Image (cartoon, rainbow, N blue to C red):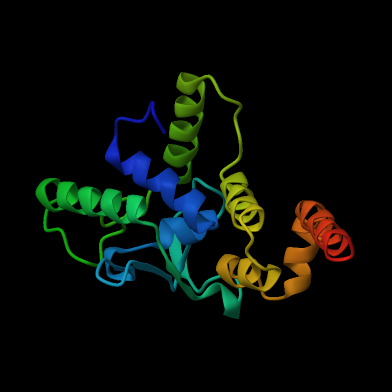
Length: 188
């Protein structure tokens, strides 16, 4: 984050990391999906490109019924989204609440997203990751800080808790060790 000087991309990568959004969910966010007073972000639509990344885009429903969700967002993200909105209100012609958070009247193109991610990683001297890996990082952050598997599944919008368990069960190994340590302390 320290090498990013564009508020759009700073807020974009914070949103991916702190909210664990899928690419289409991120692209589908519009300003009317963000409630600054309640500090929440609602995922109610998805943007996909037809015929691959170079085809036309369309708005669809989220991936599953449980993918439609409202997430609490941390103060750092609230503040950066406010800065981005102020910037967009000044610089985007006929700005409205229906404009895409990461775009304008059109959502950010997948190539622009990927290119900026790669450029920022190179500038920072860190390993390249996929956009979807921000989602995995979010799950790891939640699990490593004590969130239950049910909360992680709900936060990520997984349809079934099995999906979350199968994908992230390796992260719960440390939690299992903590339980054994707790039991050993109780019996000593």
